Image (tube, rainbow, N blue to C red):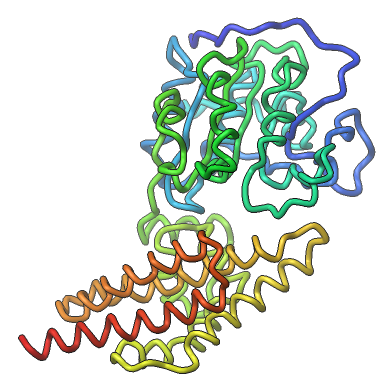
Length: 411
């Protein structure tokens, strides 16, 4: 039998729930949890370990932790974007909070899907499951935080939704393995910049000595942006990209079908990430590929394309504008960064394919192009204008290809 993390079991009364547990769904009857700042947001999906595909090693670590005599209080789920880290964090939290968690008839460790805890989680009203995202800044009591562009997770959000004593105290009597679970999504946005380093430093003591019964999970696709002192205090769980067979299995399970014309390109773009595949389909990124391909062919030949830079920035700007218009509080700048991330991923998929052709000259040009993408990403993080980033990238791509062609000719 698993040893529970020690925790206080006294039920707290007359307390307004704080933090985030996915929130109440739109259109349903009000409940006490609707006082939470994210009450208008949809609840998290109900997930189980069996819903997670091709992450056997990561899931084995989590299941062994539940079944073992000791459960670590702080975790980092790290790996590529869109491969199931956040889904696994939800499934782990659901198992930890529920006293019904035990081997089922098939021998799989799982909570009773119809238990009171699972019903609360599915409704987004469990007071002891807190999901922390940068979007919680919109509900800050501080106007300057509310109006700030959503590029990082502000310290105010961490103070309010993780560090306040009233938040850390368990909300209900619970006999599960944990009394309270916090999931910090996109934890890399607790970045290490001069202005935001205090955000990471603020959680160090809580990670080292959390209240009894508290489990904290940091989900990140860029673990290197977390302080070494944070990483050293956490149990790290790596999540991997899915291979082609696993991607096809996921598509069958999720009911995702791809247009035959673009199926191969979409799978190459996703590079083993179901989340990236969904992004590509919903964002119609195949049309980006079709528009950019002839211009990139020109750059790959070592010739400067006058239209490549403006076309790249135009695609990103149009996508970002649509995202910003769809949400009243969305940041156009943040949307630009997200659109640029999609563009860079699209270009990286192209050059990965070139590196696999077995042609040494093509592989060398592709490697130089990927280096140029790294420079563009750095420029964007340094707040260089998007139009200038794309124009500079266009020049770098053609120059890198030209140098590669010249070297091949000399050889």
